[in-house]
Image (cartoon, rainbow, N blue to C red; front, side):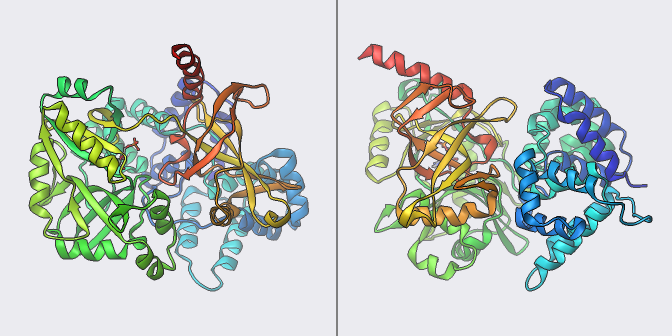
Length: 558
Ligand code: AMP
């Protein structure tokens, strides 16, 4: 028997108010351990983290706030203004749905009890719908689920379809809960997650095969592994001291891509592990032509025009334009500089030292104008590294990466094997949580955006508003991008579902009682959309506090 959705919703409600991470972890572990059915376990693990599919899966429900309004209207008879009023009071569409369901008269005596299995079936049906009439069908399907829901189920159903459970169950908590439930180490669960990016699958493997099962999990073609990340280098000297010989590459100014090529197809993932294959048809063709089949490559996609990289923004624009790709292709030619290889000839290669992976990489990439192994120099001479650094900056790139030739590839790890050297930059990456419509000739665009940093538990703490640094074209584009995220509006003010991250520059950080963070940015200026970063990768309140303190130190030095 599949678990009922009501049991799941009641469990969610029981952990929602707990603030102790340890206590939430223990409760989730207890709950997971009791689930007998593998499919239920898979779904519940995903649902608790606010997901219906793993991040890399191309399937998506495609349910926005507007669709939820329509479904609620069908199920309860409530019109949009009424829903909006309730939403203003509760600040949460989940609670709004719950209230509406409470007010609803009992409609049928023979309500079908919702199970996890049933919810999964409906979600899969919804995500498979395309084309004309699909919106209507989705509204109908969701409304039917509401009709069968109790109020508390409606709360979590709503949050689930919108991808925001508000339970505070991040990756760390889920990792530890799975480890605790079946008595395996968190490190093993973490490793398994880094290469599968699917906690549901990890949980099912631990449940059935224990730690041996986890150890056997390997990187697979067409399922992305988390990307290895870099730390800031203290200096070139210290890197040479630490590593001896250093493998130096340019740090290209583009966007990270992981390219899977095997079983006759190419799949490309972004750093957020989203499937971006459709936005890069020219890269797909070239990989098929020039690269040996059966590999996973790691690299940086760069938009090059007249020999210079175009602003990062342009590549992201291409990632997002899934439709008018043809036109974009001509405007934004892309080159991919590949610098690592994670899989070849049916086997994982991440445990090989970088020097061997590099040789393998060169052997699988044929002659091409578009897919190029990043030039690499292995040296222990500080001057050589500094030369390369200046060349990279002159060519319009960001700096250099210094890598340890003896190191393995560690998915998801930001460690000392990869050190980045770039000009000091103190910009902040902040989550966009609100905005305001403009005035006069800008009244059709959102002209200012409210920004927040995050705390340890992923709570959003506002630090300021940014209204400068945008071109008119960017304002138009961002408005289109943000419209589907509008949760509610009051006059000109808007509240967004947190999803996008902005990189902003500013003149100073001040202490201020105006925002929950107790800091405020002075003269913030928009630099770019960090489309490669998710909300939980935004800057933390700790970093804001450190930068605040650092201001005084640097002033003293002057
Ligand atoms: P950051 O985002 O500043 O932490 O820098 C790490 C990013 O630099 C990676 O995620 C890549 O997107 C990018 N990058 C550019 N060139 C390289 C390179 N040669 N090796 C590794 N990463 C690179």
